[in-house]
Image 1: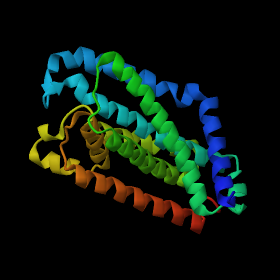
Image 2: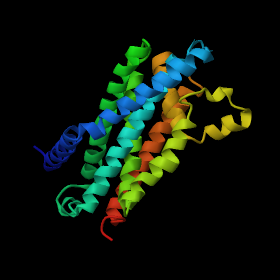
Image 3: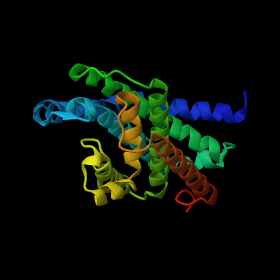
Length: 255
């Protein structure tokens, strides 16, 4: 077997083992949080709102909640893993090994993608207790789920590289990612916003991920799907290049 494939498999297996070893921290909390979202926003508040784009409110927010939890899981996994490796100083062993930078990035992001997808599956099962969604475009749904978790795992990788203390890994999720998620159309349609705020929302990458995912399930979207897919792939490619350059220059890892 190719040396890089062996290294990739070993690092991914190590990270997956960590995810399942502490499952009560990595997999369980998003499911509990999502259950509360569906009870409060879906049942209690949603019953008073009525239809949104021809579907019930709980059906409308379900894809957004699934995507939101996948984003947070993938991002959090990559950030904590990279920072943990720096904190324990075993990232130095990885960097001086024959592993290529591409292998390191792909291994860490693959594990984060897997955690995001497992969380997404768990939340989807919870959704079925509150509503019954018929997936319209399953291949698109899988593609968007993988690409979105890849995008935010790369973003988490960057955060983990730059982080110098534990507070640094919670700053972006708390003050950037969470606001962008709530303003990304999870609980409302951006078409309901005034014209100016609709245009501002288009600068939020999470708008595109949520709308693509919602379209794959409900056939409903506030943005062009082709434009959204292009934006997601472009963001992912740019973040991958940034991760590669950071490792190559040793920023945050060798100084």
